[in-house]
Amino acid sequence: MGKRILPFLVLAALVAGGLWFALRPKGEGPVVVLFCAVDDDVARVLVPRFTEETGIRVDLVTDTEAAKSIGLAMRIREDGRPGRTPSCDVWWNNEPLWTERLAAEGVLEPYDSPAAADIPAEFRDPRRFWTANGLRARVLIANTAVLGERRPSSFRDLADPAWKDAGALARPAAGTTLSHMAALRARLGPEEFSRWFLALGPNGVTFPSGNGPVSREVGKGARAFGFTDTDDFAVRLLAGEPVVAVYPDQAEGQPGTYVLPVTVALVKGAPHPAEARRLYDWLVSPAVEGALSASTYRSIPVRPGTKPGEGVVDPKTYRAARVDWSEASKHADAVLDLVKEVLGQ
Image (tube, rainbow, N blue to C red; front, side):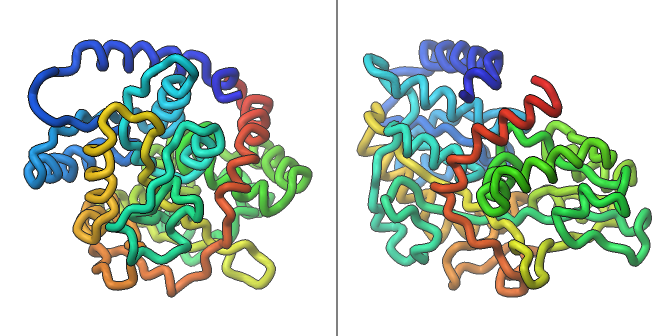
């Protein structure tokens, strides 16, 4: 299904992956291969610390803003086919949906990391296919210069005629927006979700390529509000733009704010299994969790005792949606089909 939706993306990912694997340095001591959908600038600051501490070189492979995390997930999926050798050891994903899908397809390896023993069970897959080392909330970024005292309060405002030509939503073909929409479809049911999504275009909602572009459009006043992730909101706020974050759907009967885990997983049949476990343990450690929260990623810590980064909002101050990510992942294909129907390829 994913290949049918994004054939060019898959082909490009496989070609790039083959070139990288063929040209990577060899014979330089222990190595581990990390596929990473966390922001490139964040990963390239954090990951070298692992090499400094362990002497294990990390071959870091990242993806684009628009493609994450599907491009890397497709490469892991293709490498997991019979007769192929995986090129990735550890999969550090910026959202849970594609991690769940790969687990269901049998290409991930369960691992009960001793470094994750103090992480609450809600942030660890019960089958041990993944562990979260941070969380990000899906918020409505709103431009106060455009809206004054008025504020959107729900995902439903995107389709509400009272907010016509005001909203934006990243194209739900990848990343956190696809996870968000799959979880919402699981909550609403297929018919209600489709009615809502089909109403977005006629209500003037725009569909930028990612959450960063949504935030930029709202920050400069081209759109009054839109869905984004908390780290993208923080960038606009730090830039001095007139924006606020609304944690949506807090009223009785509403789903709550969707909070997405940043997941760490092992690839089944990984070429460097011992090094992969060491990297996994390091990524889910309290030190990395705290560093991730303190970085521009502004992730919400998963351990109660980890100090949050500057500006990170305590999740106890709002009601989070309850999500079974394994169940939500089963709705991804239907969301992608609807996106293709409404927005084209």
